[in-house]
Image (cartoon, rainbow, N blue to C red; front, side, top):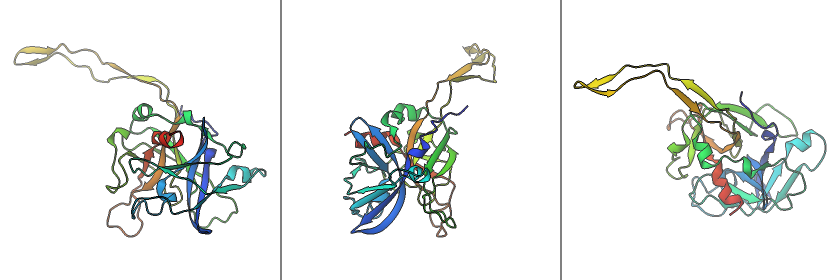
Length: 272
C-alpha cells in the first residue's frame, strides 16, 4: 500500500511576489524546517522574471508574501506573512530558489523537516511508474473564494532521475518528468513520492543450457527472484513547468507531462 504522511500536503503555501508595492504574480511553494530555521522553497521563475528569457541576475521582486490556507480554513491564526526576501538560487542554474523566513518559529507554518527530502541516492532508486503527488495552488477559472484553494494531483514518474533532462538548453539539467498536468500556479509546488514496501518477484522465464559453437556458455536454470528494496516516502521534487504537445503550438496545448527539479538540490540553499 502506498503511504504518505497526511500533513505533508498541507505544508504547501501560495506565494505572491511584489515589486514597488505592485502585485506581480502568484505561484506555489513549500516550507522546510532545518536546524537553522524555516525556509520557503519554490521555482526560481516564480520569483525572478528574468530567469527564463532575460539575463541571469538577482530577483527584481522586492517583496514576497506567503499565504497559509490551512490557518484561514480553520478560522484562527495569521493569514499571511510578507517580507523583503533575500533569495538564494541554484548554482547550476536549475529552476530552484529558496529564502529564509524571518521569525518563522512562531508556529504559523506547517513545515516539513529537511530530513524528509529524498537524497540523490533515494531519488535515483525510484522507478518509472512510481506514484507521486503534488500539492499547490493552480489558477482555476470559475471558482470564487477568498481563500486559496489547495489542489492535489497524482501522477507517476515518467522518466528516470538519472536521465537529467535539460530544459530549453538554459534551465539546468537536474529535471525529471511527471505524468500529470501542472498548469499555471502549480510552479514551485512540492512533489512527494509515496512509500513502497520491499517486495520480490520471480522471473516468469526459465531457460535451458546455452551453447555457442558446441561450447556450453550457460547451464540454464529455473526462474530467478528479484528483490526490490523499500522506498521511503519523501519530498522528491519541485514542480517547474509543463510541456506543450509540440514546440510550434500556440494554443497552450499540453502534452500531459510536467517537469520537476530534484528536491535534494534545495539542501544547498537552506543550509549553505
